[in-house]
Length: 491
Image (cartoon, rainbow, N blue to C red; front, side, top):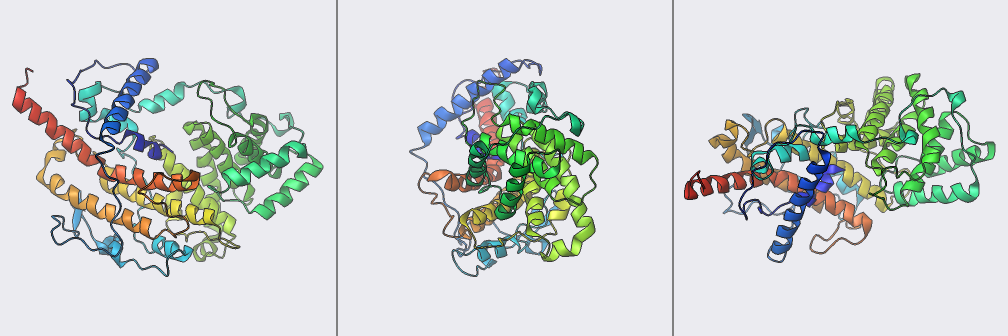
């Protein structure tokens, strides 16, 4: 998820600590030089952050019950985006007005998430400007690094070779070689899946899957959807337990299970018009496998297919989905697809599937049995995705505020509304954090303990990074203008 990795780029204004070196533009195909420049930039950021870490206390969000200080210069309402007022009536309500049914309960977070507190905007704008590529093409980055081509990382992904076993080749089912499943090997992989993958992507009912798995092992894998789902789970159980090898371009643990599975899914999806929930489940998990391999374009293709297939359930069973009486597994797939698609679209400009317009009308999923901490974390992730999409819409729908790329950035209206926008969005982030159940709420004053706390902490900090990035652009622009006025343009 690239939005998470944005925190690695969270700078403390090191761009003008040394003389700016203007470099000439480079063509897209000079990938090695591009990576060298990115590594140099990353090294600069890391050095600057290391120097300032001891001097920069970790900030914590506003408590939900704390109103704006009397002395604050920011008026909470109304604020505008492109002459469009944003006020409580439009869907953003004060964080302090959101009530919890009790600390440490799943109900509090669910109530907060369903209280329309993040507005109904669920989609990332088509022309949004919050990608890493947009960051590199901003005016301050251009001054430091020179010109970067548009959609740089998309071009890099398009040039990456895809191993034969990972290619999306539609093959007749009769020509697909299915592996022999040995319980001595596969039982361990299924356990890996539920311990390492399911806790972050709980779309399967564990009991139902084990029934399906036992039948598949007993009768052998067949060219059908149940076998495809089992094979994808085995592939994920393989890859999730391995440490990625960045030096091996063909690194793909579990590919012997994945290759026949994805080819069966491609064949099935070409003839499917909804009706079998196993297909969108398996397509989503196959997209997740590509995400583990850091192949966003292939992941996007499959999650897009999963989205168009699962949307048939909305067309046929809208009322059941709205009131939550539909099988919870379908509701979970809707939300899981939305989050994965948005994570990809936040970093790459690719076509949308339209699922956000449906999910915006759906309730949040809930657990059929005793509530587990991982379900709380997943619900927290879903609600944070709504807030992230809201931020994309408010701050990055068109030209990015403060980039210096157009005259509107320098207008009095933009500079006066930006602090109010960021302050209100940060209040929403603080409300989200404080309404997390105590069992999953990380302590932001200390390093996270374990992968579970790390994932929640990353969501919190990267959301804050995206909220306040426009101020970084403003600061670097002002510093550049100050240097020019102080030293003269000839320096």
